[in-house]
Length: 160
Image (cartoon, rainbow, N blue to C red; front, side, top):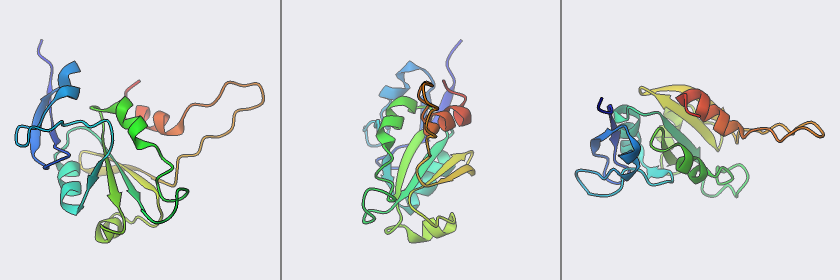
């Protein structure tokens, strides 16, 4: 039986591509610009590319709204999205939205703090997280608690 096909927007040019949903998906290249469809890191997007990714991707999209001049803590720079992209692509598209450059987009999504994570499925926000997901400390002698963002992504994608 053949693998299914899903659509995803290219992180470079925004062209929507059909990709086989199999082990080769990570190697997919855009039919328009010939660049890699999955980068192992979030794509930087503007308002137009944001809309394309959210509307066109049949895979979930995790968008991080961040501020470049807020220092490390409280800007979004303290969330290592490439770590998650390496683990969850191509099941999830990761994108970064600079709030200063895309203020109207941030306002449209009621982003009031940085970082804010929005998780989209089928073009709709299904989860919103303001700030870095917090890892509760483990009780003394207990094993470390799992990364809350990994748990969140697993829950929302059904991935292990």
